[in-house]
Length: 252
Image (cartoon, rainbow, N blue to C red; front, side, top):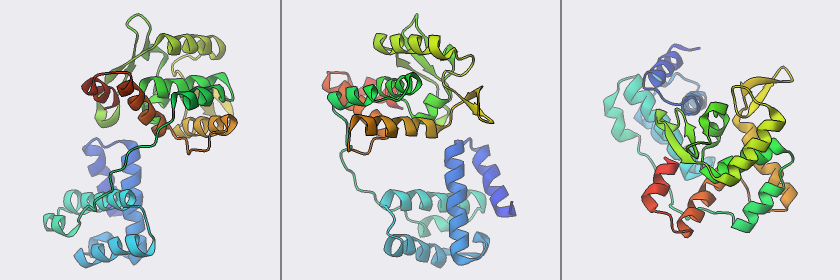
């Protein structure tokens, strides 16, 4: 590990950034350095400008991708290398605001019915019924399901926040059926170690694959992702007359 990477990693950890953001930022700076075949410490405003234009005009990257990588460069220069003057030289590009694509209720039902096994069905129902992020679903513990209060406790969500989300009776019934089948101990959705089922959390790839496989089985042509289920959850809540503020709090 290079000195600059170590410094940036420590600064990200010190500010309690999520592991996913840390990985993305470190990788973005690595690609920046590889483009110029030089340490970022030796690069300046003209290099950042050239690289941003390269991402847009030559690589044709999406605006949100350029935005994320530009944010990583800002963190590197402002917080790691303490070059405050670089702030004005690293603009964050505007990203188009588009209405999110969603699945209809009928498509949601088909998707869940298309699950390849009970675990995948429970995962998809949890994502849709609560609006959780896939990382939050992976981190769920059996003890987080509170059937008495009809909530699921989310620990250390985005930004390190804890929150509760509603636990519907339909989801609770499925989770009970799943628990009797899987018998999870600590983690609600246990993963694998060395090819064997173990008391460890699943990776977010499992949630992604559950969506992809179920969509294929259900004959849904839309690109189904866990994030799409979050959008569908919020939209269906609003259509049902839920309060906008309460809906937003559930998704934070």
